[in-house]
Length: 204
Image (cartoon, rainbow, N blue to C red; front, side, top):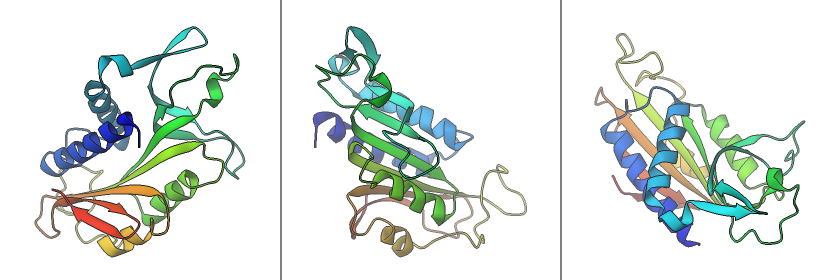
C-alpha cells in the first residue's frame, strides 16, 4: 500500500474511535464524509495534499469523484471519498473525469445491509479503477421512544446486523471494512472493528 493509504488507515481508525465516543459530531452521513475529508487532509503531509494534472493544480482528495465507468449500472456513480493516484504524468489532457484512484472510501450510517453490499459490489467491480478499497458501516442508536436525533436507530431495530453478518459481506474480497457502534442506551456493545477477509480486529 502507498504512504497515503497507510495514512488513510490511521485516519479511519481515529475517525471510528471518535464516532464511538462522540457520535453527534456530524448530523448526517454527508457530514461524516466532510469530517473524514478534513481529518485525512490534515493528516497528509503538505507535499501530498495537491498534485499537478497537465499543468492544473488539484487536491489529491476528492469528494463525489465519478466512477471510471457505469460499473454495470445505467450511468456512472460517485465515490464518497477518493484519493487520486500519483504520479499523473502523461494523463490525457481531457482525462480529469477519469483519473486513476489510489484509494476510495464508501460510507453508510444507519443503513441496511444491502447498502453495504452495494458499496462492496461497486468497489470490487473489475472496472472500478481503484487500488485500495475501504467501506464504513456505522450504527448510531438512542432511545427509540425519545431519540437524541430522528436519524438515530432504536436499539430494537430489526435492521441491525451482527458483526459476523457484516464481516461476511467482505469475505473473499480485497475491501477493508470499518464497523463502528455507538449506542447511548447500553443495549449494544460500543466499539470499532476493522475487518479484512475474515480477519476481525477490535481497536476501540
